[in-house]
Length: 229
Image (cartoon, rainbow, N blue to C red; front, side, top):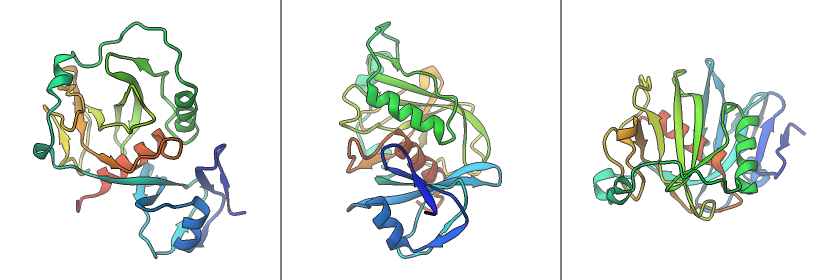
């Protein structure tokens, strides 16, 4: 077999250089309606994530990973609702609670670590939900920045709402047209006062148990590369 599956069968990793047909890859991954196949691999020293184009041949190289994910769009900020409620609640104040980290969340964090997102401390419970820090995340332009994902308290039944970068992140030529320095929309928290900028990516058709934190991060990285959207 030219690739191997991860523990739950949702991610496949290429073992060798090979070209496959898109339809074959879609069958192997169980691609559903309104889903996209994402490929992540290292290009010019930086981890990249890109959606596969339906019908186009799939070029594989050792270490590339492939995963299906929901449709995601860069939502128009002003058309959404601001997160005034989130601002009033004070951002991401730790609760000090010792509530056990859910086993599903622990499994998803292990998945991040084994797929090249190694510095991921244990999540912290906040007044909004679980806070996931990504220490020194390598962006598609090769720059490193701390990043943050806030998970609603009822995750994974619902998806994350947006992704955060440190305000001094070196974004270069990445598409930051939906990186908001002082606002957040669609119910996301505005953490600008805490030094975080919110990146707007709204997930459509989230499937708990199928789509994971790894799915979400790869989609976000692919959006940073998408200068045409």
